[in-house]
Amino acid sequence: MYTRNETRCITVGSVKIGGGSPVTVQSMTNTDTRDVQATVSQIQSLTKAGCDMVRVAVQNSEAAVAFGDIRKQVDIPLIADIHFRHNLALRALESGADKLRINPGTIGSVSKVREIAAAALERKVPIRVGVNSGSLKKELLERFGGPVPEALVESAVEEVDILDEMGFHDVCVSIKSSRVPDTITANIMFAKRRNNPLHVGITEAGTLSYGTIKSSCGIGAILAMGIGDTIRVSLTADPVAEVLTGLSILKAMKLRSMGAELISCPTCGRTEIDLIGLAEEVERRASSLKKPLVIAVMGCTVNGPGEAREADYGIAGGKGFGILFRKGKVVSKLPEHELVDRLFALIEADEE
Image (tube, one colour):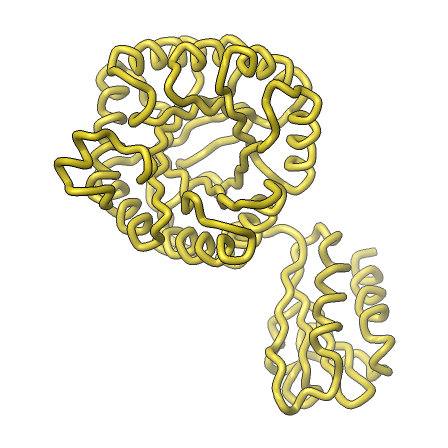
């Protein structure tokens, strides 16, 4: 387990962020917020996938009204995403927002930020200060010569200090760039200066394939240094994919234990079974398991069990047959076509 950076704890609905609480996963709806039923349906899908909290865009007064109707129909903490119009933040608070997300580069004057903070403080609703490389204030871009990590951090610190000065301390911070190295550097720099919980992600990461790679590299690197209290994987894809990817990152980093984890060896010239097909079938069937387990699919009956001795269960194939093993010890030798069924039968029997 990584030594987590000590941060202030804030509460978003029923979920705690920071202060040593488990790292949470969040996403954002891509429906028109004014379409209440479509938005509620997507939030329910995200919740089922394992999302801990959901952000919703509040881009106009109609969306602010709809936000209130959505809030009544879902149980998951709901975050109102606000840009440009500070009055929408006030409306969202009235509609029951569990958290506000504002961007110092787009929300406007300090007086407007103060007005939002006063209303949030009255309702005990935390605020996320979101700083993105694409929306920094002009003066910061000129001072630092572009959206470099130093400019990102300075923007976040300035906003946090404004809120601190008026006694508002329930502040989460996100500092994101589409450049992975810049995001990593900026989060390290901010963590050294303030103890606010950090929302970690790579903004505008891209499509499902490459966006997953960028996000895994950036988020994983930051988490490995003990920094980060909540994450969002930003993909040009179905938001459910963001949640599944985020959970997988936390599982791989051993920061969350949920469901089965698959380990499988790469193919090589010694492989004499349909290793790819077996691994994909095991992964598909294991996705419904809730208990934390490690399942191995190995392509060599000689070395497989030894290489995967830390796995709870596993199969290793040879030419037309394979072995089923538990904790590195062989349970039985089987025809290849029976391996997957017998594997899950063994798991089910052990759980009874």
